[in-house]
Image 1 (cartoon, rainbow, N blue to C red):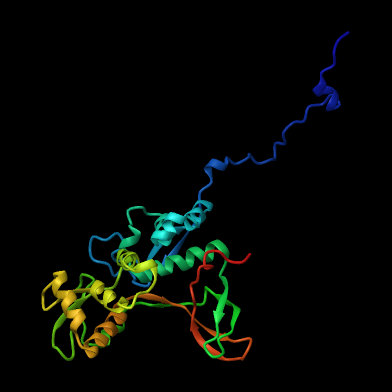
Image 2 (cartoon, one colour; image 1 turned 120 degrees about the horizontal axis):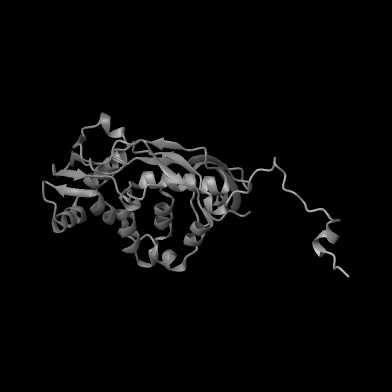
Length: 279
């Protein structure tokens, strides 16, 4: 007795034929991570030779599951390097080093990377400056402004054309050369702080980082001595000049306390939940 073909029996003797109209299945290995262009607050005000010199934007990739692993890596978190590694991962052009970017440009990348991954709504806990009560508040990450670092144009600061600026301290008449901070400076400041917290001498440490020279002296011994001993008038002036030359992203939104109805414009706080929204 001839045994019937099981496949023919189960299919009623008819084998299914693929539809000619059905599109071919895409190979998942061919998937390309989408990208977006992020406007740089610096508008490419980098020294000649830098990959972003004269560029007003940078192309970044959307965050991936692997990037989420980076943000939870205990070793990187302990060293304060998780965000730096994330920035490097999402930059499409690998000739661009994340640590060479100005802090303001890095902030722009972080904001856009987070928004593309989890949306523009950012819910976090906010403490009211008036009553001290903590409540949940929702911020819109798309509501931000760029500061191009060009406020110095109406002052006596001189642009040296290489990313540095020259100024004269008002009381001591010392000539100083300063520059915006970059990612490497930011990492150095974090790693030199005990327990990764802001220390009492953070103001002078930052000044020593953004100062290139005093009266032409570029050695660390001279810079450290002048910073530690300059008057408060000179200190405030050089810090004000530093803010004027530093491009950044301004994230300020109106906050209304649910407990006491106090209303105030606040800087959006980037807490530990910035990349891990309550979903």
